[in-house]
Length: 416
View 1: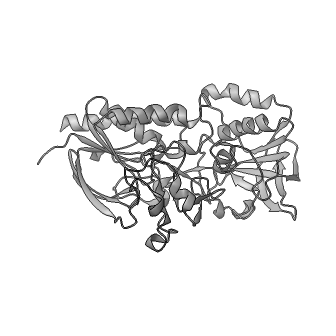
View 2: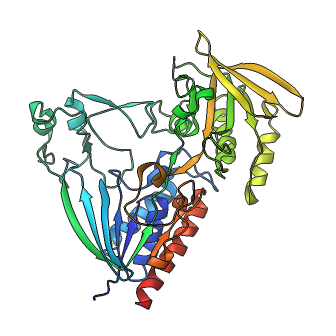
View 3: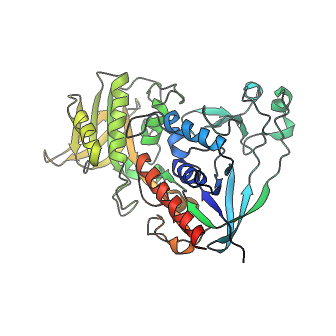
């Protein structure tokens, strides 16, 4: 039996990248497998992230440069692990590579986009924006190449992008491939997905246009987003004057996610600053069950509480309704005042929780998970969880768990 000194990292988000670099920079070969056409994960969709309220370019660009300079790190995008066989020190991993239809000749000049006649909803912008069938995932995507959505592209019957490309970068006949790697240990950094708002019937079930999720708010506020950073109502493009945040939308609920997602309170408080920067006179109401601002974030919470145009109401929202003008009517209890009341808002932001990706999409590895889908086992098999595959975490803490996972993965190789 041969032992491998390589490490597989499933997931190329902030945690996966961190784990890969930590291992590679002490001498180990690492393979990153990422299902999206780009590295960076959820962080790339944010306007700012804690603790320094940095834009995604702050931390990701440094890590992208580290990857480019380190030959021990190899990554595959549009890739999915389909099977793993073997044991710690000697795993054979089969990986499916979906066609990108755009090769390394791409210079990201954009001429293909100009001639493409087909539009699609942007999943990166959570449906708030559009892209062409051939598109660049986002402004700082790595690899910096376009990709074609073959679910909407009409293929060779159109071919306008092929004709427009001066670099022979587009191959509409590219096929799916399969490769096999031999690795000694595995890190699962599969990340998280926002809880499915269509399951929250009392909160509109995703049918109220001006009731958006907290991740949609991030895209509206981001300079690279569908409105170039201007926070506007999706239904009519108006500037919102009254905004409500509904905390624990689907969280701490035995019918949905029965746990606290840790960072949702801070995300909403952060988004209050987005609104305040653009609309100094806007009125904001935060409906909450409990406010969680761990450690250093207590000062941030205090800053928001001191804003006289931000009202915090302790109580659960019972339902959302839409009126003829597109305004959102919020019915909620106010526990401290002993009231149940209705209020009307231009825009409502639902603080949906973090659900582990594998709870929705599955995982080809046999690991022990809790009832909610977070990985709680696998270490006995040389498999280690990092980031939000393990528990709901912020970016900084996700990176810390990634460093720990890298160390454990290395220890597995050394002991074999």
